[in-house]
Image (cartoon, rainbow, N blue to C red; front, side, top):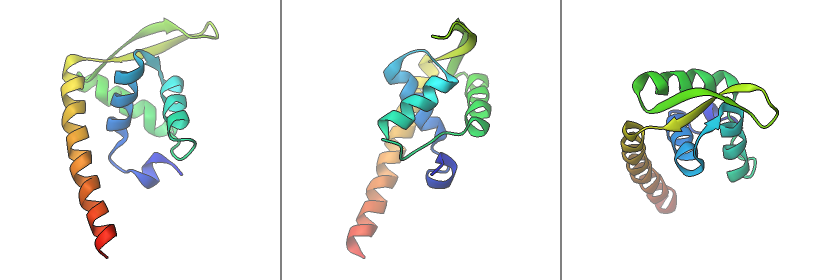
Length: 109
């Protein structure tokens, strides 16, 4: 199941959290981290991830620079900025409220 299908609108939250927890990562490593942590439940798609990374960089939530990957290739590595950490905190709080509300409905009906 793709992130777009299951968690529309939460891609920024997932990416910011992965970067906040694991430090500077390149795109493939972000996808792998989320895939690993969710035990294959969520898979990011390149067609969604890379445009989102560019948008987040333009918004000032992340910063990117060229780094060498484990395989020796030059890749764009991303890290969360101070503004990104504030955005992450807000997004996490909103997600918790929405998740709690959905759980209440699921338990009540």
